[in-house]
Length: 260
Image 1 (cartoon, rainbow, N blue to C red):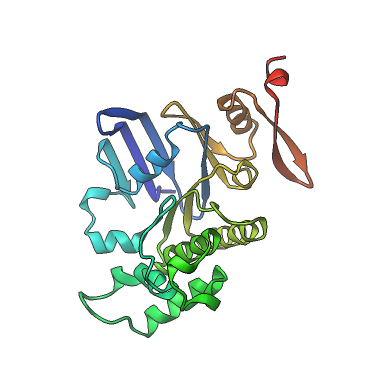
Image 2 (tube, helix red, strand yellow):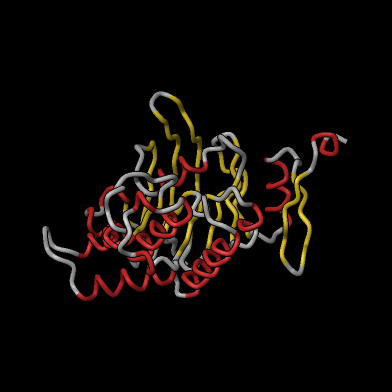
């Protein structure tokens, strides 16, 4: 099976500081890939590089075409992005923010058509934010804003969705709803890549990309023993994995216990 997204990156810098080193990843359709690792591992930088938001030494290919060769609108229809802690648009209505996800389909200065409106409503209902579609973003809580931003990404209808810490500010019930949404998208053939700090959610993904010190330490099935060993190792064995009702769960380990 040919990859949807592939990267061979020699290095990625933020300013003059090298952050990523010798990255090779290959992602396939219909898979949910969770990117995990300790703070400062380079997870968000990797996701931004995959989205074409950072200059890289190397190449990222989308559907076997160099990402840099894609026209902007076509790429935006193919790769949807949800960034970390996005701000701005405080005076915009929630529905207008979600409609921004439909811009790649619209001619310059053209008004949204019925298809755009239907896509926005479907996305907002899916993330349970349709009820406050007329409210200003500045009047929403952190969790409500996050659900609107997720709806904006879903409204694109792209076959590839990259999300950086999408569970920020979401309470447990809405985290569970997010999980259902992601699994439903993958069942339809969409590829989802998400940076997650919530290890218990990440362990339910199809694949893990385990990072530390700006490198991919392991990429494999989330349930494999190799992935689990790599996960524990990058956290200095300060987490322990156990099975609860058929799901792997990460439990914290004290420093004294980790060193014993």
